[in-house]
Image (cartoon, rainbow, N blue to C red):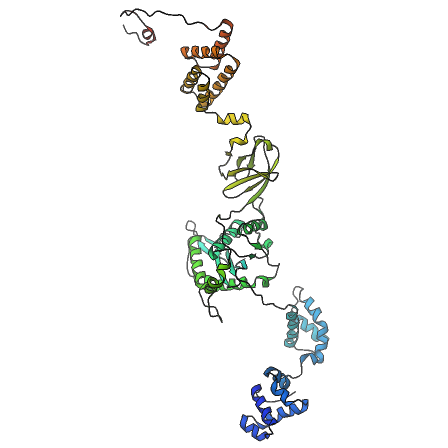
Length: 524
């Protein structure tokens, strides 16, 4: 090995030394021209003679190769101590997986076996080299608009509840487009499904389009608490991505390198958002997010290190036009249930404590229900059989009349106008009877039953008898079902009485008429 005091000379200077030597210059001359000591010149020339190297070859090779020739030294793998430790590297790597086992502990065990072995620093160096070599890192290239990485930051932001004075801590959703490193951050109330999907929707609105692939953290790790009324996060996220035309490619479990860009983005958000907001107080989630988005905007507009552009410039010029357009209708989370249609041909949605109608032919059958914030869709054997607006009235019924059988439809269609319309088509006396019924002041539902009874009488008798019975009811101002039924039975036995021709009484001031006998007080 070439032994020389001081710093290693630049290889360009050593090539000048070799050129001058090739030209036959003396050592003293070379030393004076290059400003190198004569002993150093001698050492380099001796190395050339020792290795029997060709001067033309040495002058033609690149500087790193030339430096290796003169100062490569004795490689570590030729050290006898390395032969032993090389056979133990797999064992040490396996031992490090055990709880409490450290590199220093392994070194102490090693030095007991090999008293003249490596020191702690060299031991750790060879062990780390082996571990790094087994986990090589790959540089990934990303196409514009291809992927969106998402994650939740480990630390939370907070705002103050005005009513209670309590600090409300909020998880922060972070996303970035790997091609431009364009970032997004948004605080939400929790990491539950509704808030997660809402933050993701706001992210797509922020970047103004949807990528081809979404790369979230491992999905099961994001489920905070199971709930029978909420869909599985995998299902909800798949529905969301299907709506926006995005494929889902989750990161592998315990593989932070799969989403290294968003992990690094979280660190930047800590510096450029969290740190700059640490002295401010917020009194609502909305005001907190307004401040967060303002800092994120400045972060995206900050010039990147070692690059002549900022994230926003690269996003707008190279990536935004590659994103797919957002659909016109915003996404709503879908919830899935399987329910039985009750005898009243309604299903009971227990989360709202509300009933929704289903066509009566599916009574007793199982149906699949998909509901969102605004709609309830009901499917039977793959066919959509009912769609209702979501109703949050506790104990209420949402009923479509066409779903009911004919008897129930008739029951729900009942109204004064319904009965008066039918009477008008049947006869004038019946119309007068029903009109008098509804004007009589009784509860409307009681009149419905009387009207149904009168229609039943009409179907069982002749129009002549029925009209006469109604006319008699009008004369006596008695409109009950029983009275008209008794009149009909009387007329059936005795026949309809003929009206007698009456001669008008002569006009006379002393004749008492109907008005006189109807008066309540006697007027003489």
